[in-house]
Length: 110
Image: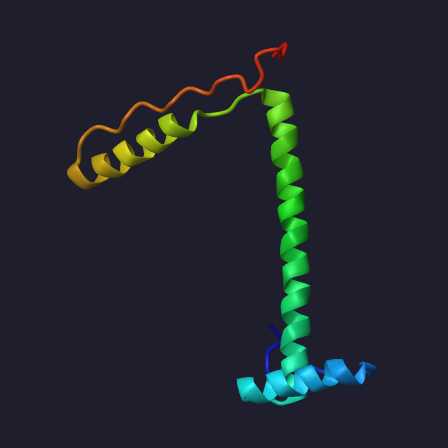
């Protein structure tokens, strides 16, 4: 979100009358000016686009790692491990043994 002290740049946005009416009504309901409402909406949309791009990049990297390493962890084993680890931290018991990765595809040559 933009900060109050951030430099602003004027721009023009032509909206259909019905969209402007919706913005005016929504802004009034939120206790904001239409201008502030649009700035907030545009900033949130831009932030979501940035987060989506990062998600897509992370997904691609994870897929490439999976293709390269052919290793995954069983969900139930991982959940049991993390629960036991949390319990060990609380009680001072020895840390549990980490689960071993398994091939994600049986037909893989890795």
